Amino acid sequence: MTLEQLPRGTFEARPVLMVKFKYLRHPFQTANAAKGMLAARLNMWKFGAHGSKRYKNDPRFDLQNVTDGFASHINDSTDDTKLLERICEAYIKSVEQQQFVSKAYEATEWWQQVRQRSLEPVITALQSRDIDRLRMMYRNFFRDPCSAGLLGVPFGMSKAYFGGKIKDFHRRFYLSHALYRLDYWKAQTDGRFELQDLASPEIGNPFGIRVNGTFVRVGSEYAHCCASRICDFLESRSATVVEIGGGFGGMAYYLLRDHADVTYLNFDLPETIALSSYYLLRSFPHLRFLLYGEQELTKEAIEHVDVILMPVFELKNAPKESVDVTFSSHAMSDISSEALIEYMSHIARITRRAFLYIGNSTAKKSISDLVAQNHQSFQLKAVRPSGWHSHKVSGAGVGGAAGVATSTMFEQCFVRTDPGS
Image (cartoon, rainbow, N blue to C red; front, side):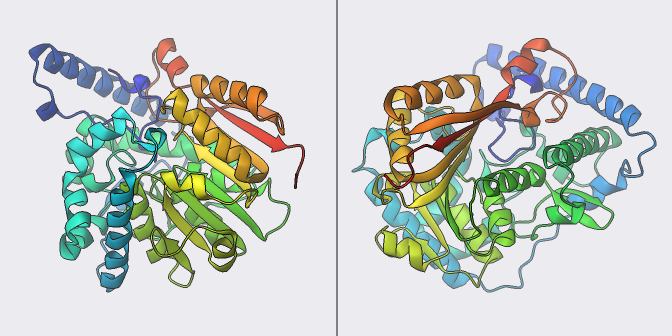
């Protein structure tokens, strides 16, 4: 497998496939993985050389920007004990309830593999209320396995970037990748924002690059761009936004930071909701949060809080026409057809104005067909390719038409034609 065959993107929130030799038992699998590593390294070298040439006279192309961006800066000055206890309580209740809900809300096979390979320590800490251990992982979650499936570097290359001095080979690759994404972000947002708008808190010990004094964490360009796209569909600053599969809360951070009157709801798997609860509670201590088990999900609850973070099976309890915009990035690309039908029925039921989705070509067609067949109150307003996962913008290398094809993503926007019905 080469980097081009990772359609979810490289250094991207939502996520990269982490391949580690200890999970491969068959010698042919080991040999294939070794070939994949060699191919990945070659593509990284090509992309780094390509970026060096493209940005030769660009003052941003300074390898020190990568060294500074990957420097560790764990913040341990805040007492987050009560916050972590609250997260554990919500997590335990959600896992207990999970066994009684429809199979449509079960984790995909891919996520179950992530759980088995990387998430057992954090799951154990959450279930046993081991606050000290949970704190240690969450304060370093950008670099800790507790965020596997949401964040990471390709092919288990953590040692190359987090193991001390980063080689120029890896710095050139990452810097090329980061600058391509910054340029793409600028183009996608029509130059409306400055680099400083990508600034974000250093919660979780994030990594990225530091350019002209601004720390640009991994994936921030995409998250900020998604937040700005959502806001294009809000008729007023006072609105309610639902995200399905919000990851650790990267998009939500920019949405809540820049739009104080927005109420935000996220539905995701229990482990991910726990992590996003940590990130957003730490980022916005002044906001009112509702976690699972603290109160029923009603219209009144939505009206009296700022942020609601729930396991995905609670989507069925979201009140009818209670949100203005529903957004999902990639989270629905891998679910079963039965689950997609279930999800779309609730999206159509709760959404007053628009549904914005980013995903692969298969999900694009499936969602379009479902809307046309079962949800005629929504119409497809626009569809366009999303270049965030292209071989250049994602940093995945410069070779292979097949790889480019598999990484092609699309953005679809459906608008409601009978608001308030």
